[in-house]
Structure formats: C-alpha cells, structure tokens
Amino acid sequence: MNSSQETQCHAIIHSVSGLCGVVGAGFAQAPGSDNAVIVPLQIGMIISLGAVFDIELSESSAKATLSTATASMVGRGISQALVGWIPILGNTINATTATAVTETIGWIVAQNFSQKVLVQ
Image 1 (cartoon, rainbow, N blue to C red):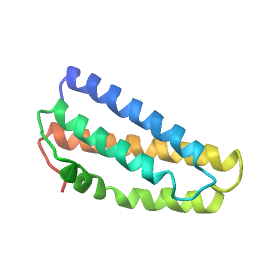
Image 2: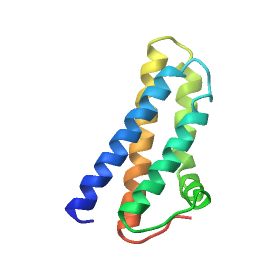
Image 3: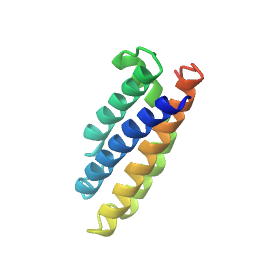
Image 4: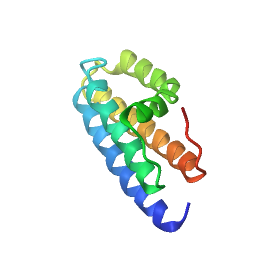
C-alpha cells in the first residue's frame, strides 16, 4: 500500500467508523436496530476501499467480504445485549464497539485489497 492509498484508506475508514459510532450510540437501547444502518455503511466502505486499489466490487461481493468479518459482530452483539439497554453506559459501549469493529473490518479489507487478496 503506497502513501496515497493509505491516506485514502484512512479517510474512508475513519469517516465510516465515526458514522457507525454515532449510529451505535443512537440506537443502543433498541438491540439489533443499528445493523440496518451500520451494515450498508460498512458495505459502502468496502466498495470504496476496493476503488482505492482498482478493485471493482458489486454489492454482493462487498456483502460476501463483510460476511467474513461476522465473527467480530458476535462480540458486538453480546456487549449490546449485556449493557446496551443501560442509558449512557450502553450508548457509550455500543458506540465504541461499532467504531472499533468497523475500523478493524476496514483495515483488514484494505490490507487484503492492497495485496490483491479478495476475501470471499
């Protein structure tokens, strides 16, 4: 990954992770409801990251790439179920987890794409 690609990846991953954190915080008391917003954001992030590395992805390919990261979503679901319903604490934990999971997914995908490895 060259410096230009890394800069583009930073912009894409950090902005989408920040949005996912806001969504996670806002929907913390409604378990699972944030997935309807977060998953499309993550799919868009994956498609955008592909473009950085001249990899054209369809929405279904991006979904397949995202599905490989579902194990991390299990941890997010557990934390939301345990404390997500508690005002303020649940919002903070849900926001942090949504941000961290999205960052992790983004950098794993970016690294794979930089090596022209399609995760499907």
